Length: 421
Image (cartoon, rainbow, N blue to C red; front, side):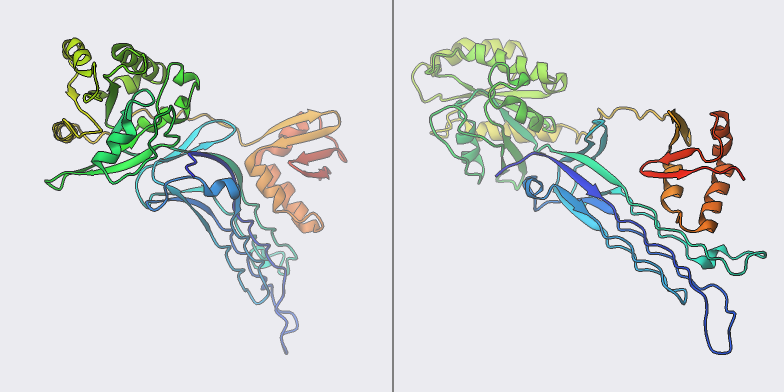
């Protein structure tokens, strides 16, 4: 089954907790601290693989997590780092933040990868907190929580040539003739329900990839028929091969068909309409096709379109068409994606305070990190957190908002009381 979009939830691993431990050996009754650090949590990495051609796996596996880091131990033993998770996707996968719609990365080449969620840092053991005035700290950090993101994956096929046209104009028949692809072919609309890729091999060892896109109809850019699901698959193609049924057997006018399909391309994206477009006048073996071709040939040439009379059924004109397609591709540059939006860098404050009734809610990633890594059962850890807040300027901000001793503070899901020291 071909699936070209999926929404997944990914979680990186939590860092392991640091350890509170002291050296205790015979003849060393007052050994110093030797608590080891926690291990870092595993990262979530997305990587392309040329062996994959669909996002089907994610329908049955919508949530994936990396391993947590292990806790530190005594004798300065560092906790084991959590194992990364590598999520494999097909080449041509675009990654978006699901909520904001922001594009994170467009993965086009085999083996390309991106880190989408970084694992949490392991907490420091009490060895790190030794000072000249505190030789026996009973303070250790908890591990930093991992990240959680909801991502939308969208697959856009990568092909040199995209076949477009109405249903039943002969796209599937043509791709079966010129490549080793074997799409389902039948005499009714929407036989092709999924895009098919075919590799065309020329006699001079020249090869190129053709994408057979399910038939478009009027209103495709709004979702009519199967259009909007598959229009995106021709965005990456270097040129378009527009197949037109010249026989007119289904009561449609070939010229009107051409105008309707081009209008749908334009309404979906101006970029599609600006691609080089070659016309294949198909079904020339059927009655009335020759007469219709003679009427329309001058129109197409006046509009500077190259038009080729062919028959997918008999093979007429296909070799000439393939030669022209190959030479056209050779003359085109290998275009990179140039429609990336310029990244706008916004200044974000380190934190901001919101007062809701008697509770002071603090927002900010840095504050959330330090709070989550604090053991509130340990008075030394709580004192350290308050000093961190002071250095950040957060305590002054809270006082300006009117905080008093014993007021409630909430940071994400953690609630505690404030005491002025």
